[in-house]
Length: 413
Image (cartoon, rainbow, N blue to C red):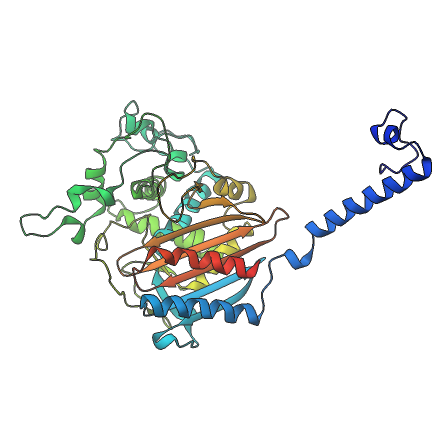
């Protein structure tokens, strides 16, 4: 019963302050109306995510302005609201908006990590057995139980799957390793050359955590290692000489792309599906880590803005992993990021940075990769309403690019 009920006891503080029964009822009625008003305000549909043609035009003007100022050849955008696609456009040369952008593919760089994280969580959900230990893989499984050549008692062997997913393993980032930037005898940096999966593994086996206590440290090494875990758990289904990357990509195609309806997505080096075209890279920075195995698990997916929206919709609806695993994926696990940049103050979950805004929790990841930039975000309100925004470009342009999806979310909220 509400406070205005005649069942209020004499000892109730409100009754003590308000001796008149009639006034008591008025006080109770006023409080009830106030509570109802607050509830209605919280559920006000005007505060929900919405989309219309006016918002589409606002976003297109936003994209045109960025494209012109940064001289980006093309930008593809997409958005969804509560599981429904509401936007799929593209801006090409001379800021022209044209049809057919749903068929233009871009390298989505580190947005790939979202799919890699989901693939690992799918293996856990399916209770996939580790060949070495004969146990189902779990978040607390250490690398020493997965890889035969990793000493279980070593620092590397004690790193867990959870630490890899949440960037808290403190393993060095191989894309920051000076060894790969120093010119070799042919006066070329190794990062500009092609590398095999096995050669990269041999180098990374020497790595060990740089901090005794796990803390957040962004490292592509984590997600390359996660791709290797997929291979270790799936390789028995393939002929002995099958390349590791083929095993990993087949699993992601079957478990992620197929369930999401991502029909035109693929991987670096794959031919473009019929009816699609791959955007040409525009390099502001010297191309590095773009050939061979460098990007495996961490940045090797090629997709369209529309397919990334399909990924967002399938993920949030429980088609990729169940809702329990989805909550695990989206729960921030790292301390707040303290480095300067667009994610200062955010926390890392699994393939997503996370920040609590005034009206919603925002999940985002971006990437830069040899002539391309990508950013993908999902905003979710306490009542479960959600919206996604995706921006892809064929230029390794300024870091301000990552703020475009945030503006799209603000426009839709």
